[in-house]
Image (tube, rainbow, N blue to C red; front, side, top):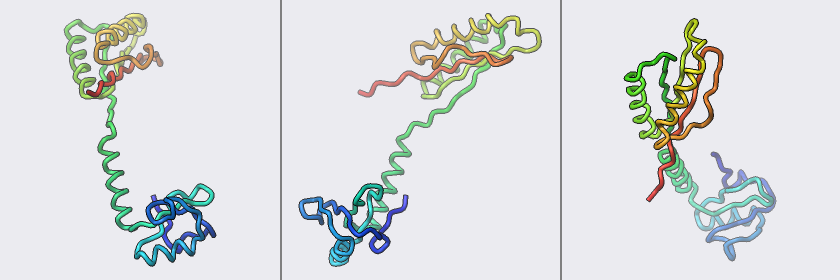
Length: 172
């Protein structure tokens, strides 16, 4: 984000806030604010340009940019990086294979990722559409303790899907 500084601010009046404003908040002529900033060997920075009058602050611009960059970096580091992991089933899946894939889905959900379960119908296996829906519903119920389905199983041609999102962890 770029900010207008000192003589780049072209409006006749601004709202000056912060420790260098009288009472912490005052409406003042822009040229007077720039002169006050120069006397303090600091910069007049336009913080909020979309209000009337624009809000400005007298601060060290380079230090301000550095702090903003640090804040953005901290926000980015704390934001959750959720991936969607895919698990594929066939309508005629064996019990052992199902349990194996269920174990992987559990691991993905515990890591905080979403799991997209897909039943692929190949050739004439489309006649087992109910079987595919049963598998996906069973899958969602088996993961109920650590994840919740985002919607009911949806069908799109020869593919049936359901997405399970991890439950929100309660912070202590």
